[in-house]
Amino acid sequence: MANQKQRRRRAKEKRHQYDLVEIDAEGNETVLTAGEVKPDTPPRSSAKSAKNGRGGGGRTGRGTPQPPSWHRVLKRGALFAPIFLATVMLLGGGRLSFIGAVIQTIFLLAVFVPFSYFMDRLMWRSHQKRLARER
Image 1: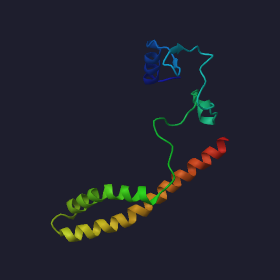
Image 2: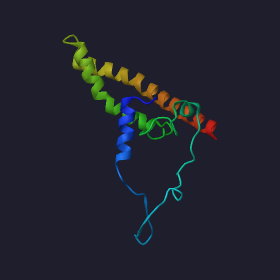
Image 3: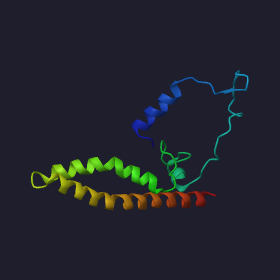
Image 4: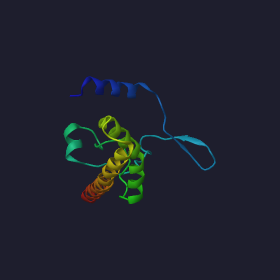
């Protein structure tokens, strides 16, 4: 049974009137019927979607994972470096000089960057396994 939030969302979706249209090469719009609409991807069947009654299942709004790359991980490290430095300086209080905070930040980045690459690789491999299982 759907909870209140799900019921409200379904009611909101049914409230709006809209037509599916197709625009041809000349810019003319033609209204499509339900029989003419073709899904971009074939429907997935999984135990989770069968169990809760939703088709498709899974998270939405997230892109597919990209293959791991050191370039992307180094950019991520560069984004997090100032955050790490500020955190080290705040947690160090007055006992830590600026040079000491920078050195600690470098050590943090030396752990963060390979760990981040490992996590990207883990997500990529699990995504590849999931795709292979669906085929």
